Amino acid sequence: MNTETWTADHPALPEKYRNLSHREYDERIQGAKDRLGADLVILGHHYQRDDVIRFADFTGDSLELARIAEGQKQARYIVFCGVHFMAETADILTGDDPIVILPDMKAGCSMADMADIDELEEAWEVMTEELGDTILPITYVNSTAAIKAFVGRRGGTTCTSSNARGVLEWAFARKKRILFLPDQHLGRNTAHAMGIPLEQMAVWDPIDGEWEEEKGPMEDLRVLLWKGHCSVHTKFTVEQIRDVRERDPETQVIVHPECTFDVVQAADENGSTSWIIRKIGEAPPGSKWAVGTEVNLVQRLARTHPEQRISLLSRTMCPCLTMNRIDRPHLLWALESLQEGRPVNRVSVDRETAHWARTALERMLSIH
Image (cartoon, rainbow, N blue to C red; front, side, top):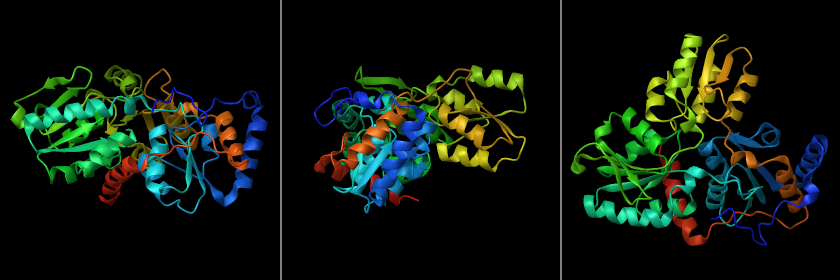
């Protein structure tokens, strides 16, 4: 979906919601939430800004929220404080009811936009012509419903950073090779941790329509990586890790696997958003951490664990700009519109796409 295109169903934020006081926003959001009662469930991703996530009924990473969304069939409305692909996933997993709302339809994901369905269809034709029926497609949940449906039709599944290794093990039990998209770094880091050498990986450039990187003979390839990335996590560097260690050798560096291969290899630890939260939560008082992930989460961890010294790995801010588009003005507009019986910014996936995307998601949810 082109989130820059506005229609009658997705109008711009009305002027009356733009200049309220902090107190007015908070009181009216809470009031609307109270009046909607059990009809409403608000889901909030860990990267969401603090002044919004405080209103969430459930918080989590992509996998946690996918599971939670699937169980919300009794609610009339799900308001998803996240980005567009997450709201699509909620709609896919819950069917026609409840209505899924994304407070700001411009809250997209640059990574998801890097995998276009037409480019994938063309790439698949080339890959299967070269390598035959040996490839199982796997897509990170940070992808559009159309990409998930493509994967579902071809026997593949989705994954998150939390379960990527289990999904890849599942896939390799079925086919010799996997196509992993849209984030090349999560695919590379996960496969390498499983013992697959870089020489057995190659990168497909969808813009040029050709292989960008071939480490070894085509016949030896096991992991085909789509040339996509997260604009936040690729800002972390090995130089930043060196700087942290020079300043304080006792500080442990922990990063997300969407970071580049060199950064993950240089870090002390790496893992999903939920894993990072759990790891730091279990660490002893006095622990020192430099964390390579989205800044809202890092700052929240620092406030939650004042007994530790927690800082962002980078000295510059690394927010997810599209996630931060979900703000109190848009949340208030969404909730009051529901109260008035005229939902705005509904996310709805057509039935054919939803069927195959759900197939891919359910395969993921069944993998332990």
